[in-house]
Image (cartoon, rainbow, N blue to C red; front, side):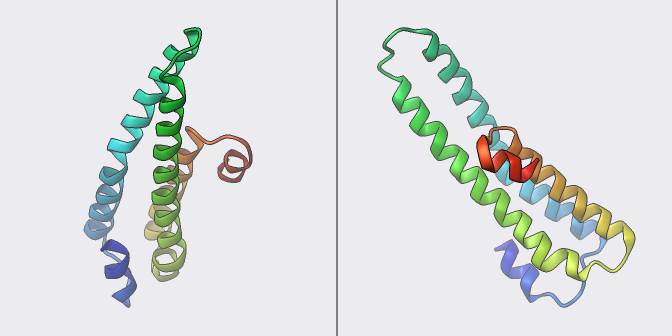
Length: 121
């Protein structure tokens, strides 16, 4: 919904609109980031056990959450690059969007490994 709204606009967002957008995106990710931290804690606990019957399920669920987070973060990053930064009229707006990009790359870096971690770091 947010992406469609932003694509339909021909001018930049004002300060209040930028803040609302930032909060909306962040709130959409918070529950998944929390779930991922919880699953990682359980995974660590299960790895200490020998022959844990739940470890493979936990790892599969962790991967699913990571994929969802990556997709959502990449969607936000794409929206910033393709819509918001192009329309940013003043330095304050550009800095705001670049900070958002840094935040969403950091969210991915919290769990990423290998090539993905290198890409966002």
